[in-house]
Structures are given as C-alpha cells and as structure tokens.
Image 1 (cartoon, one colour):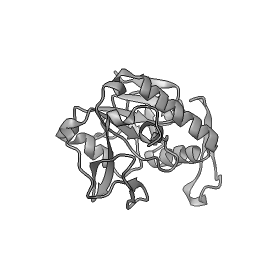
Image 2: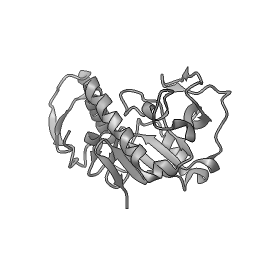
Image 3: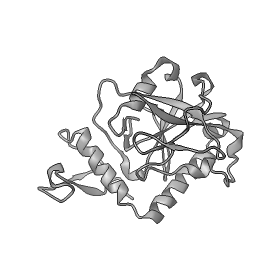
Image 4: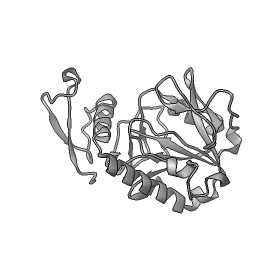
Length: 222
C-alpha cells in the first residue's frame, strides 16, 4: 500500500461516521492534525486491513527481521503479542517455527501500574490477559535484566522517517526508553508501511527509534 494513499479523518462526535471529512495525504501531515486524530485514523485503517493482507504483510516483516544480521546476532530480544491488528510477530517465536526461536531469549511485557515489566516467555508457557486486554506473561515468570537485552521490537501505531513513534497514548514505551538502563538498547519500530510517514507531531519527551521495519524492508534512522 502506497504511503501517498489518502485517507479520511472522522469527527469523533459521529462515532466513526463521516462528518465534515477532510482528505489528507499521509505523506505530508498538516500541523493542526494532532496525535489523537492521527491515532484514530491510523487505527481505523489498520483495523480495515483484510485478514489475508494483514497476515501476508506480517509474514514479510518477520522475514525481513530474520534476514538481518542485527536480529541474527541478538541473543535476548524484547517483543510483543499482537493486539488490535498490530503486525503479528508470532512466527518468530511460535512453537512450530522454523526460524530457530530457541536460540534466543524472548521477553514480553506485563503492565504494572505505569510501567512495563519484562518477563522471559517460551512457547510452552501460558499467558494471561492483562488490564488492557493484551496477552502477557504471568507475574511469576522470570524477569529480564535490562543488561542482557540486545534488541527491542517496539509496537507502533505509526512512525515517521526521523524515527519518532506514535503509540496508544499511555506513555509506557516513552517512560521505558527514557530510563537510563534502557537508553542504549537498539530499538526497532514494527509497523505496516502505510503508517510510516514523512513526519509526525513530536513532544519534547519523545525519543526516536533506531530503525523501523515494515513489510517493504528496513529503514535505518540517522
């Protein structure tokens, strides 16, 4: 899907029905378009993806990750369980994978108050449903020492070409990546190509990612 594709913003008051719709290009976002508007729009587009397209593009992202030396050399990788049609990374760590998942330690987050706590997870381990409806490890699962982490695969609603990320608005990854123990970790935004745009609104506390991976390949920042 081309990044130049035009989409319609919906007035929130109409609960998703078109109301004074403004057609904008995802390539050049108007300054008055705020993060909340963008989040609603990108999520609406993502939710509208046909299942076959979502699966095909997710598999392509996984293939790009596996083919990279960065991923190959990483021993401990932090990832996420797909939620609300985020790119699905489960082929990387599922029990029936052919991608040598067991050569890595996989970490997944658990939401605790305003923070993410990272736990080791293997395909043999069960999961629980967290406060936001997202699958997460159990509290008794072993935690991961930040010093052991080589790579963080970061879920995004959207990213821009400077590496800035649009999330769900809770600030969990902003707080994580601002902490000293996580500051030097290589971060990769995982997003579909339609949501990788020229520029997003940026707040003073936003920290750019090191790279972005979409179904069309890698985009390194800097």
